[in-house]
Every structure is written in structure tokens, then in C-alpha cells.
Length: 166
Image (tube, rainbow, N blue to C red):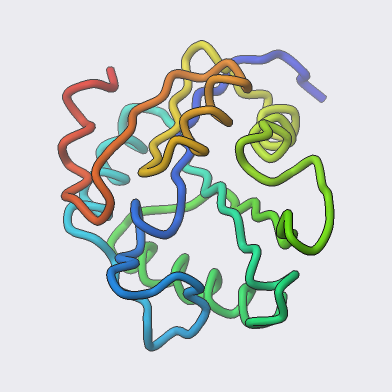
């Protein structure tokens, strides 16, 4: 097995970056899925540039009993399917099911653990990788993991990031 760190990745927050979260906080129902403008095109271009695409998401609604892990898995399966239809292939999804009002954990963003797990699993070079988020917690998690970060306005056209990622 080759353990050389040589892959590069773009990590994406889910709600507000990939999926429109206008008017929603705990998104878990497939009928509430609305992929933001430019997401599939941006992901296709990044794949062509050799990046793995990985989603990193806090899903505290699970701990708060707003929805279940099964709801989250079903939502993610459909999200991956819809993106794949448009030739945007997600390598993996990491999510934290905890919420600070219910329990302590080490994986919830701003902590870098989800990114670190993905980097270890896929032999990702953090200095060649990026985290795209719409909240300061995303940016802090990315910085703590040693990856480059881009803060975007929630639910904006994702194509805006392409000029910044080589």
C-alpha cells in the first residue's frame, strides 16, 4: 500500500455552500435539497484539475433529535446521486452528528478532526488542498487542519472560487 501523501482535495461545507439553506437550519429532507448555482460545474472543473472532492458538515440536528443518522445518510446518498448525474463525483462525506448543547465531541467544526481523518484516509497533502465554507467555523477548521481556505457568501454561485484554485 502506498502511504505517500500526494493527493490534493477540495473540502466543501454542505449547507450554504453546496445546498441552498435559505430559510432552513436543519436540512435533512430530500424535498428541501436545492443545489446552489455553479456547484456541479465547479466540481467537474476541480476534478479535471486532479482534486478529490469531499464534503465536511456539522449535522447537530441528529444530537438534538431533529432528525436521524438514517435521514442524513439518505440525504447524502441523494445529494451524491444528483451531483454524479452532472459528472460531479464526491469521493466521501464526513459529518459530525453531535451538538455542543447536548454533548462534547472532537469532530464538530471548528475542530479539524473530520478533515484530518479524510487526509489520512486519502493521503491528502494539506498544503495543496482547500476548504470552501460559508461560516467562520468552516474557515477555522480548515486553518487548523493546515489547508487553504476560502470564505464565500452563503448560497452564492460556487464558480467564483475557480479563479483562486490552481
